[in-house]
Amino acid sequence: MGLKENLHKLKMKYEGKKMAPAFNALHTFLYLPNMITKGGTHIKAADDLKRTMNTVILALVPCLIFGMFNAGFQHYAAINGMPEGMSFFSTAFWNMDNFLLGLVTVLPLVIVSYGVGLAIEFLFAVIKGHEVEEGYLVTGMLVPLIVPIDIPLWMLAVAVAFGVVIGKEVFGGTGMNILNPALTIRAFLFFAYPTWMSGDKVWVHEAVERAGTPDAISGETILGSYAQNSDVMYSLQDMFFGFIPGSVGETSKLLIIIGALFLIFTKVGSWRIILSTLIGALVMGLIFNGVVDAGWIQEGSKFFGLMSVPFWQHLIIGSILFGAVYMATDPVSAAQTNKGKWIYGFLIGFISILIRVFNPAYPEGVFLAILLMNVFAPTIDHYVIQGNINKRKKRLKVKTA
Image 1 (tube, helix red, strand yellow):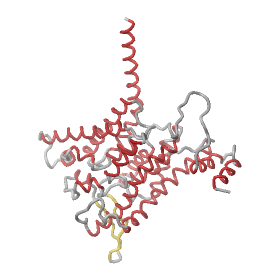
Image 2 (image 1 turned 120 degrees about the horizontal axis):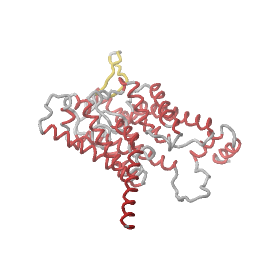
Image 3 (image 1 turned 60 degrees about the horizontal axis):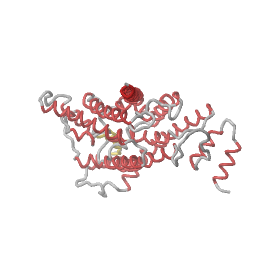
Image 4 (image 1 turned 180 degrees about the vertical axis):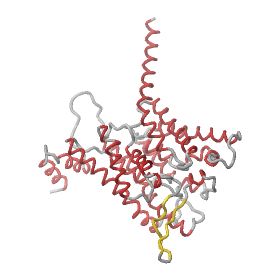
């Protein structure tokens, strides 16, 4: 007898019992659900929540794998120096030593993220007696990609528990949450453990044995260098391909762009939100460049470094691109109307660069900007819909006059 038949028998055995949701979730995770829509008007389609979540995960996997290679690469580069003539296909990057070192450091983050998050999802499903929802599948993958690679696992576990319970379950679960759960976890870490999330240093390796003495190594991020008006040692090519320190998923802009195209092609990600977010970031960058060119900010000012960054370069430093593609497009917490998506995305990009420049202690503002606009997304949609209603009322008055 096959696995499917055994799972089905186990599922039927616990049908109607307290633990039924847990077995149903395992069966649904491995195989298609056997439920169909009944009654009422509905649209028949092949996609469901699980397929949608899996599509996003597929778009994230290249960033995860690259991040593992980059974790090992940054460690060895900190010890031996950055190799010259790096390219995306350089063997100095794509080697097994880099990958194995990254694997043993990134994989525990993935395991803790999924283990704690899904355990809480199962617990709430059993307590409430409803099916386990697949919404955490993407959140569990996003969390390891946006946290510092050296974060203690217990700290990550606490943050995941907070994000799932407070950020989602208290609102009713998947589809009902106001805030993006992954960014809620990130925000909790930022405010509860600020010394670990300051953004000016990134982990390269926990310790290196030198003459029997552990010696911790860390490297400054690009945003940290700009914020402190210090020289940036990385080329534009390094920034674009991702041979830079940073959170696991944010470094390779090339892979993020490929992931964006995949999400847009599969109609899972909103191209309006992605494009408008980038436009908003470029506009704010242009404004700051204008302020510097006008001489209103003098060199040496604590704001000069990030203000003087060419406006387009803001897209390849930091996590603005990652946030625009994988965070801002969350269909639950984002704006729903087409016009609202343009407004929502533009304000995310605009505010992200604003926070990035004026908060040199933490030179990044993407997650704060997205969470802020998550709160205002329903308001934006409300006024967009109300505006459409008012236009129709005016047209109706003209026709009846």
